[in-house]
Image (cartoon, rainbow, N blue to C red; front, top):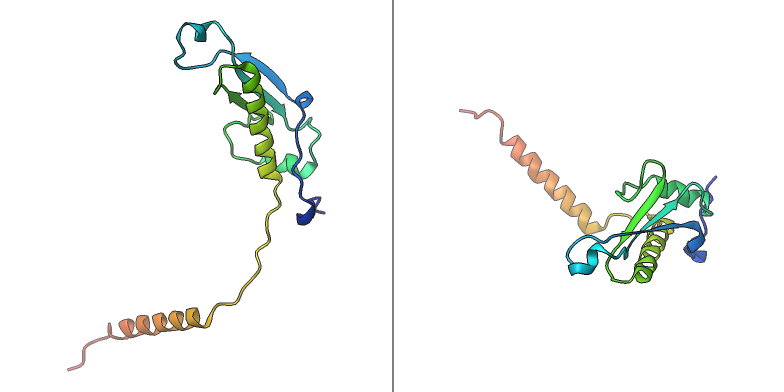
Length: 142
């Protein structure tokens, strides 16, 4: 039994700050004297299994081949683009919500179409040319 939503009523779930854990860390890279003193980068940790997401989204998230996903089913996102810790928190949460929205997007079903007349003709012409080439490979008669 599929629990996926109807394609028309698609609204991606949004994760609240209460469901994630933020840890302040020191940012990497150049930054002068301040970079070694201020913990402005942020690690966001989101436990998929204990979240309030629907089961089908949890399964899709856990099956992702993503380096941000740990073996324990925790998504870890590092944000260090800005100097402000608060802006990095907002950035990390936005990236998490973006990832979940991408996974939650329903897969569009493929509608079968018939081959066009031109494609049928091209296929048959290719087959006859190939058959002629193979027929010419026979023994040469004297």
